[in-house]
Structures are given as C-alpha cells and as structure tokens.
Length: 111
Image (cartoon, rainbow, N blue to C red; front, side, top):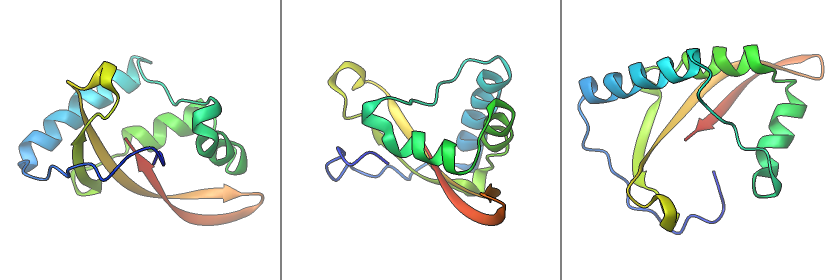
C-alpha cells in the first residue's frame, strides 16, 4: 500500500453478494485487458515486487482473476482529490511465487 495514505476510514459494511458482484466486474476488466498496475516513481514497491517474483502479464492476470470474496479486507474512499468519488476495495491474496528459484507463499495486497 502507498505510504501516502493517512489513516483512511475503513469501510467494511458490505454483503458477500456486493463483494462478489464487484469481483465479477473486476474480472471482466482483467479479461478485457482494462487494468493497470502502476509502475512509476511513486510505486517503486510494485516495480520491485514484479522484478523479484518475475511477474509477467499472464501471472498478473492469474493472480488478479483468482481473487475471491474471502480475500477482501476492507474498502476506503480514494484520498486522491481527482478521484475522491471512488471507493477503493482492498484485497490480500496469498499466492505461491518464484523468488529467484525458491517458491514462497506471498501475501499480495491489491487495491
């Protein structure tokens, strides 16, 4: 997660159906190629993670499309003023990844 977030209010009052509905829309975006994993100076942690675990597009899609209801942690309002109308859904997915020849089970935070 970004270090810029200042104690966001955690929104947790969602039904299982609401989260599953969100995930259905999310998966459609993944399969349509309409998603971005930011890799810029503000997201060095993403760059390092992708390089360390040799994440390619196929692996990205596998991880993202594998999100399930029980991977959901909470949601919060986007603290970027340009996108303050958006709600960010935060998930933590455990996935086995190759770290330079050693398989590791890693917690991956996705929002």
